Image (cartoon, rainbow over all chains, first blue to last red; front, side):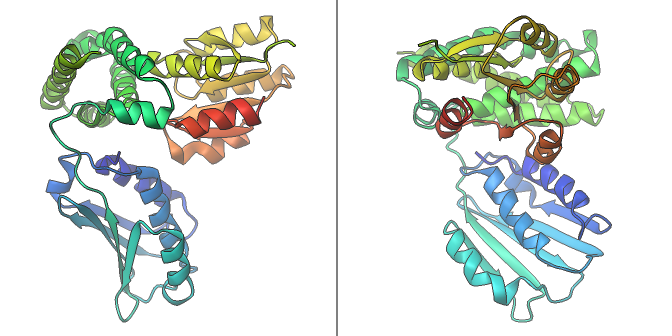
Length: 233
Length: 117
């Protein structure tokens, strides 16, 4: 599952620590529509691929621009550095394309700009959790998967309560609660819960008000609870 | 033959439960701790074949537990699990033999419980 705003944050962190880009003026932006829904795919693979490309330029970059565009099926990552040719094109293009069949990489004719296209459709909004993905990807039985989900709903309710009653708790406790919900949401392939918790976690970390985000998180939680009651096997 | 044993420290229920299920599947004894301090105490009292530490935990984080264990000349392999894939290099330099990034897949559990035991 790809949470694009999480990818953007992690990517920034990585780039700010890479030798070739750490002193660069880095701009990472996205079309607002793209940030609304989680997407199918692996965020670590997407980020890793961008880093390979960014890290291939042997000279120090002073200005790096990354802009995400796309639609309901694909994400495009548009990258340019200093408005000058990037060394990645000729020697590595074929290798990268062969190594990463999920990605399409286009270079401009002057090699000053390239775009990666990733097949990453929006996750279907009707299912708050993908129980088959739990079974398949974690390698557990259907029985265990349902028990896991039941346990999650029982044991993590307190984390939601911490966020709803956040004035009674420290920033650290709030952050931990949101972090746990995000992590468990991702583990259990509950994309809307994970995405909502991710936004709450980010706002708490930055000391930004997150009343609306918590409302959304609460609604994602209730939707999951409801779904569980209706579908429990 | 004596079963191999693992200590897994993780504050979040879901991940603890999955590790427990995976250990059962691989015939490994699994002890669970809910925070870093408990993990440290358990390591001092018991002999495990492998210690797996979540990085972000209440009280002591995984790397802090590892540093404490290293200062006490603890020689068993330590594995870190983190949700932040940008800190894998740092964790390895803190003495972890391997670092796995959440959410873990079936193949990750297999690797942990087969290759590091």
